[in-house]
Image (cartoon, rainbow, N blue to C red; front, side, top):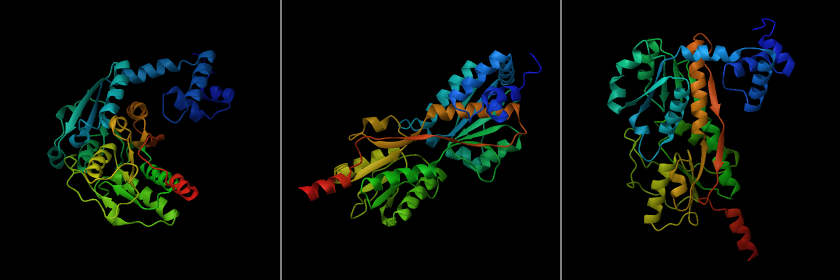
Length: 345
């Protein structure tokens, strides 16, 4: 390699920062696909052998672990298992073994971790979904690289890959408000799961900004956060709000069932919007509007961050937010249209 060709050379030629070049050449998050492609093309043209460097980084990683609480792996909600599948594909591309470990509530309480993750051949651990800080602390105390997926622990300085749950909660609430909804309920246990709390707080921000009431009798729980099981044994508020924000698609599914059993129609009587856009959202009747971050994006950013953490153990921990989209379907009624039609008629 021509030693005169440096990252700064590439940066100057393309008019980007040296940090951007570093991120692109080391397969780090934070660089768009277009810019990354331009940087790699320029590096090739100038003779910068970045690919050899990346191969060397991957060759130092033989095995990784993916740990997830059992209640996040219910058959009906494959959010975390799909992220695992995508990370598995990336590991296969680089001849890295990925082991899946599922922790029961008892395992978490007693901090029972699989001994294999502490072996020398295990280079790093992904924790997916909210998990006890006692578990994370034990692994961190052993000096193992850790990447947290879909949550973070404020007491630890660790890499985290996240959806912006607070802003997503705000966005779905604003969507409902734009559709004319002024009395909005929430389904989810915001006292125990940080992600749900963030979604709930985002909803409240939208209500406050629009001078709408925060009505706590409209906030309900239809699942057990410890077991992950959902139930129809909950009471609907009276009178019903015109819309509910559900913390996930399965919570919305059980709300659908409860509403239908109680004689209500969706979205004519009450609208429903949700999070995660899992497969069930397309099969529900009516099809469910749901906001989500790509599982593939989660996996790619988490994998890149893990490689960086292993090869650069002294670098500052990073918090990476995954972009989100709103999948608009048939579960939200436009009350502004309904009202205007009524007034005209």
